[in-house]
Amino acid sequence: MDDSGKVSPLSLLVLFTRLALIGFGGVLPWARRSLVETRKIMTAEEFAEVLALAQLIPGPTICNLAIIIGHRRSGVAGACAALCGLVVPPSAVVLALGYGYGRVGDIPLIQDALRGMSVVSAALIAAMAVQMARALPIAIGPLLFASAMFAGVGLLHWPLLAVMAGLFVLSLAVGSWRPKS
Amino acid sequence: MNSDMEISSAIFLHFALLSMMAIGGGVIALAPDMLRFVVETHGWMNAETFVRCFTLAQIAPGPNFLFATLVGMQAAGLAGAAAATVALVVPPAGLAILSLHFGSKIRWGGRGRALRAAVLPLSIGMVGTTAWSLGTMTVHSTGQGLLFLAATGVLLKTRLNPLWLIAAGAAAGAAGWV
Figure 1 (cartoon, rainbow over the protein chains, first blue to last red):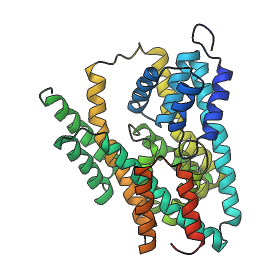
Figure 2: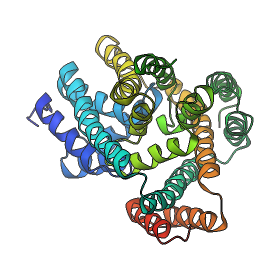
Figure 3: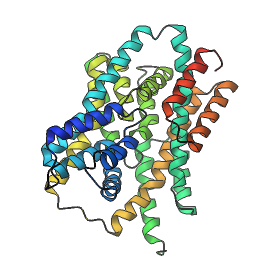
Figure 4: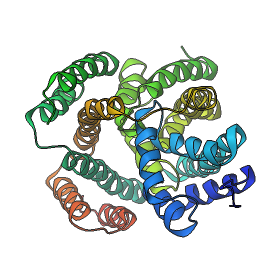
């Protein structure tokens, strides 16, 4: 990073490639550590602000994060470089893994091991849901909307897009109608 | 629909639409809908294969949404893998880059906060749905249920790297306990 806070597209490409390839179990937890604490290309405040924005705009959060940081440090070229670094190398790794599984996946021992790993990866998502729920303000409204989303898509198998659109409008309406606390 | 190209285009269209809906919870939250699309609607793979793809992507480095790459590969080879990945990444990225480049600096007043407050419960519900659908597909025995509960508990109570738990799951599976 030079004095103006600019980072070249090439450095962004390398930075996000490295980030993606060490990011076992998801890149987001590693992103903060690397960008804020190790490489110091942004402050903790800027990271929090960028993360909030990245969650709000459509698309995978981690991609949006790379795009916003890349764009701020090096314009459109930076955004594309950061995104490519994040997505292309790990895609190749995942494909290789899939290919390998296609070769040896029929071996009973591997089937057994994968069955055990699948249970844990389901638990990973369950823990993530609980951690996200802990961040909710303790109030009847948010709990109701989270449960309605779960019931509609998870239990009743209604189409995601319809449930999401409907609940989003309702949730926004309720949120803006409630007296400010 | 039989040829890889036809399957790939169908995957591309559906996943691109889904990705534009991925607000807050990320693409993990879309897994149940993807599963329904490739398993129930089209029968390109069975649910077990879908879960295997999800698991393989979890043990690989990189963004979590790359499980979709494997789902695409499973359904239609390399063309399917490319279609799934590009569909998830490129349309929202194009939108984001265009709006960052041409839009005025987005201002974060009460409106941003209100949107966030409205979206957060829905994302939690969606991630909960993903956990539920993966859980019901992977847990069929008491041993698996215990492993699920133990792993969730450890993840919530400690800061242990999840890879160790996945390794423990592999060992438990290989040993024939679950």
